[in-house]
Image 1 (tube, one colour):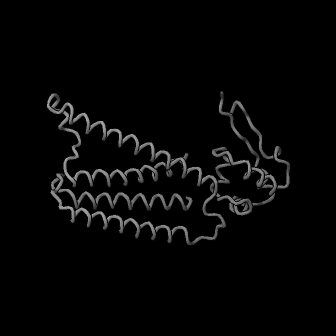
Image 2 (cartoon, rainbow over the protein chains, first blue to last red):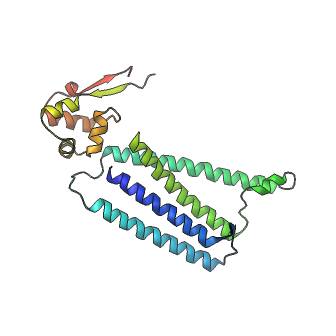
Length: 152
Length: 71
């Protein structure tokens, strides 16, 4: 297993844990809480700090040791580039889905009540949760793509 | 147009010189995993790495790598 694969697994676990923390903090009985902007800002800062600490630890532990002269070579960089492209495509698709969903809700909500079943970005908590989750999901897609491409 | 396939005999050359994948990787600036992927035909190396590998074995490039357009 390459160091990049080890780092990807560790980072993926971190990403899932941060997402669970975010969900725990912003939901109650699987519904969004009415959080104040201060609470949201605190949550944001905590998440960012946790991510920075975790990523620093993983990078330090995984990439610092070892006797191999080469940690990353051209194949690693090629896989990284393709994984980033996958994450970019994923984010573009999801953002477009959110845009279309938001527009359709406003346009046809009264005609098609079924639209109420879908995502509504009506409060700062929901917007914050969805956007931050999207960042985490994009990162997770990159990591999963990396792991898959190493195994292909 | 068919994609084709880059074939190589790195494994045979490496084993003839009693080199490990790690040692060859260290000499040419690649990881052991990349050398393994190249040997198995899962990864086609860049021209630069391919030239490094043939130079490491001190044999002509075409003795190490070949291209199968129907592969």
